[in-house]
Length: 487
Figure: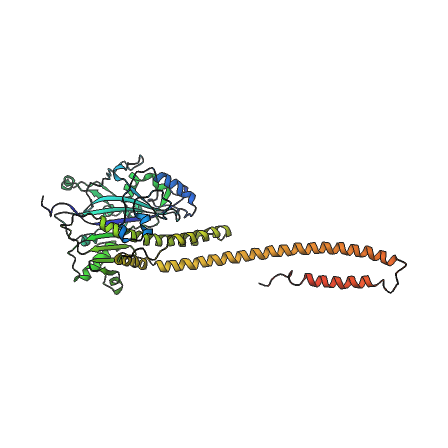
């Protein structure tokens, strides 16, 4: 076999499925269309059952970053798989693919073999790839996570421009049952995979499966504990191709746009090149192209010769994936905060818990710089802008400020009510003391009036003094500080 026909890696796509860790009683199957949206929680008691199930899998210790590209405090999170590590706010679990076992409740009618050495292809496409890694990244504090599927494309003799091929593949558009199993003819084939088999290719047999079916075969135990809020995955495409022509920028814009946005139908007219679309593309280095949308990002290395480069995709993945997941995590955390604020009731105790939770998450997990490397930092900044992190953060700050105002108002109201109660008690006490004084005064006055040795001119004096003291006491009680404060 010649060098050009030898399968070689030419790029990778990472399909990221953000999920919430939920109360398992509210959720049976996270891929089915739920009758009721599972409760969004912030109590870490729901984390333990999920982690217990997760620890039932076997993991590898492969890292996901290049140490020299990121600051030290970042490398602590992604240098290697760190299941259960308490040092980072993100915990990385890399599944050992050879050790994954099919669950007893798997779909018995689907023969889904998960093997990192097997070639797969998208249905109705010649693009071949390996499922080289499946990782799950857990954010214990925020009760969030990210399932990450890595597809590494292979160079073969019938290879054509990979970016152009990806722009024509609908697979990455949806992954949930309600989207992939519509009644339309061949709808499921659009969003399905199949093992590449020359014999089946000749006979036309198609043993296809979707991401949801793959989950039910291998990760069934996790499904009751998680909920996927989005119908579409977030995508990171990492390509190495020295043949892309920068002179054909209009075609480059459209291919990048269609690869991430993914048109719902082939009948959709190609998008018009707008100024906004042009701003989605940047070139921080002479050999690196970056394209970002809300749906994800594309990174293209323009100097890599795909026909002779014997290196794996690990260089591209380890360079850019960490920046991508850190930016995505900030967006997902803030979206969850917005959801919690929207559904939270007005009880003071729950608002205080939410206020403290938001502050802790913000302090631990938000950052604006992660690398001294220009292309990595540029990529991170572009993602922060595209994901509208600043806008979401401002929205969160306003919400936090509103929560603080509500808590402060309620605290002041409680303090006023307590002060009023104290004043009533003091007034009651003074009233009792006054009554005792009156009783003593009357008793002594009777004795004073009956005394024969007291001049009659002095006998009215106690009554005059009592009247004056009573008037002063009444005025004192109904004035400061016992008078209720004006609002």
